[in-house]
Length: 70
Image (tube, rainbow, N blue to C red):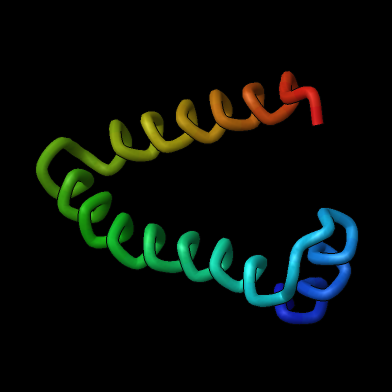
């Protein structure tokens, strides 16, 4: 799904497909490392607390994106 829009994203931001690829790679690596850590945190603290923290982090990130100038 993301691979289809890579050329459009690159064109809109004036960067090469390789640079957009690095951004996608960084996201995937962060995701791959974060999932096991988050799973362990859910086991230790509780699934409900881990879900709540994740939901709040997502909401905070969404607000920061909404306030971004561009």
